[in-house]
Amino acid sequence: MSINRLQHIIGGNKVSGSCGRIFDVYNPAKGEIIRQIEGVSAKDTENAIQVASNALQNWSQVTPSKRAQIMFTYRELIIKHSDELAELISQEHGKTFDDAKGEVGRGLEVVEYCTAINNHLKSDFSADVSTGIDSHNLRQPIGVCAGIVPFNFPAMVPMWMYPVAISCGNTFVLKLSEKVPSCGLRLTELIHEAGLPAGVLNTIVGDKEAVDEILTNPQVRAISFVGSTPVGEYIYQEGSRNNKRVQALCGAKNHMIVMPDADLEQSTDAIIGAAYGSAGERCMAISVVIVVGDETADKLIESLKPKVASLKIGAYDEPGVEMGPVISKQSQEKILSYIESGINEGAELKVDGRSEIKKDGFYIGGCLFDKVTPNMPIYTDEIFGPVLSIVRVSTYDEALTLVNDHEYGNGTAIFTRDGDTARHFTSHVKVGMVGVNIPIPVPVAMHSFGGWKRSLFGGSSIHGMEGVRFYTQLKTITSRWPSGIRKGAQFHFESGKDA
Ligand code: NAD
Image 1 (cartoon, protein in one colour):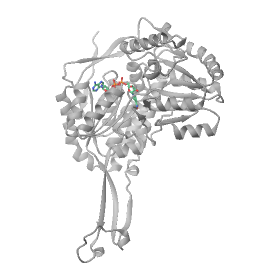
Image 2 (tube, rainbow, N blue to C red):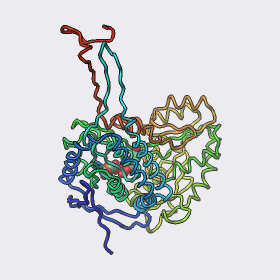
Image 3 (tube, rainbow, N blue to C red):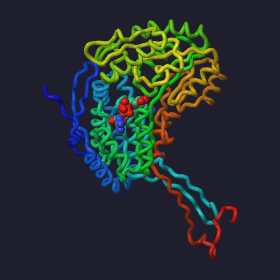
Image 4 (cartoon, protein in one colour):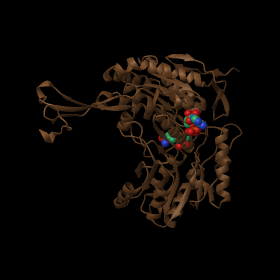
């Protein structure tokens, strides 16, 4: 059987890569190769950047309202094709169809945010900062921008980036994950169908060779990265060293605190979705639950156990499936080695999902560990699989200290009925996105997404107004007209107080 070969989209044309490495794209539910793509070389990447640079002059002069019109049409096309896009995601990633449609919807919200780009680019104006002198700001495009994205959200994460960047008047090179390229390529076709001029968005699939060209090419002005912490830290350091603006959103170990007064049924349901949804392959997944008090912990575990053990696991197109496989054989093996290490270090494995390993496909069932301690690798490391650790503490203060001492600070949540505790938590926790009785507090498109500590390098969150600021450069204009000009030279800075 011949395997479908995908192509990159540069300058609106489909082109082959020439790095000499063929990436196999799997259906993780079957463990079979379903597509392939030859990655881009450094030279191909340089070409994509040049094409984006050539398109910049014209695109940056298109009015924001005209750019917004393309986003309106794009929105309609994404809605029309949302089943097809979700199917592509599920085929290559393995997540359930509903989950895939949900991520298309979240990406779509960013496109909707961009339909109002003329409003987001509105500037400040101050009249009479001194006699006859006015001052105003412009947010202008920064130039050629690039995005480097992970495998776990093939639609949503790319849509956090390029719709905002191009609505702001930039051109863009999007480097997709070699594990899940089809949805990003299809989204690129659709935006051209919506009227985007060729060269404004160029979508490539490649590995370190392509990334290193992006990091060193002087025409690239800004880089958005989403992925693991070691790669993100490298991209932040190299990109910054080459004088590029970089935002790198990275790994996570998200803690949820369950207080003794929390509704245990609601907490249980929240944990099941947040820890095991998408097989735990979400940067906002809950992978640690800190329970305050042994009595609460005992009750919570009794309530969780049957639900974890009965998770319906299978392929995205099987009816009623709640959790799919993990992305790859390597990922499955890595998760299994963490489960072994948890057992060897003395944590109690209350539900053992290894019984779900099948001959075909990269499956692991939900795993639940009790009595995990902060020195164990299953606590310290991002496992990125369906493995939940329960840590028992005696007080809220101990719980807060654990969250704050962890190296990652992407998301966190507290489950409680007590307003004082919730308020204390939201103001003192050192984490970027915080939920109160919300297990996965992913900000909606008009807010911004980003963690703290080693979950984000470069300080800038993504989408919403933070995204608009990241993809624009600020210009401040101070002007005076002849009727306001005083006679004689001035040897000091003018101030409103001089008037
Ligand atoms: P990854 O870091 O392996 O890959 C991310 C991107 O970097 C891919 O495009 C990949 O091709 C590229 N890449 C990989 N190795 C590279 C190297 N050595 N040099 C240059 N580029 C390289 O991440 P992944 O496995 O695809 O995704 C999972 C990770 O992403 C998890 O750590 C998860 O927490 C994180 N993530 C973070 C967020 C967030 O917003 N903070 C969102 C989604 C995923």
